[in-house]
Image (tube, rainbow, N blue to C red; front, side, top):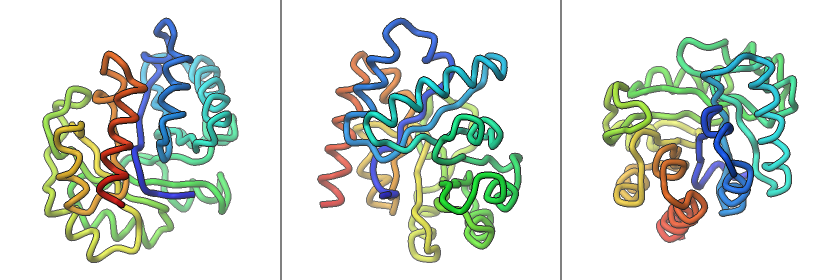
Length: 209
């Protein structure tokens, strides 16, 4: 698979909205690289049902599904991988549980040290952020675009940028070295999430091309 492109992130709150499956189908069909599911509100059984429905949508569009934080849920539904935060399970433990083909990403905030450690421990990509004012996580500490540049020069892993990324600033993250644009509000908070996803895919393709 390609670790380059637009990487939308949705959650269990969105999965409870009317018409969410049609919307997610449009987003998954927009040419995105991967899709991530975050379960933050409900119980484990509800998260399993939601993730399984989302996986079916992703399979129809041949888009990898990544589960945030939850190695057990990822294994249970047969998702394509897991994204681990700083306080989550060890990368080596996740690899052991999910297998060699699983996609494992790691949050590194603004730290090259964390990214280098993640690379050594076997992560498939690393994520830095937030870079811009964020509606989804306004309290998250700021990261520097210079960190993306340094990561591009010193790491052998694909790099994701997250935090307030939208059509107005996506090129700044791409110019600094981001391979993946991880996006929450600019897609799922838009009046037309499918159109928003397609626009970001276009921006990424124009820059990469």
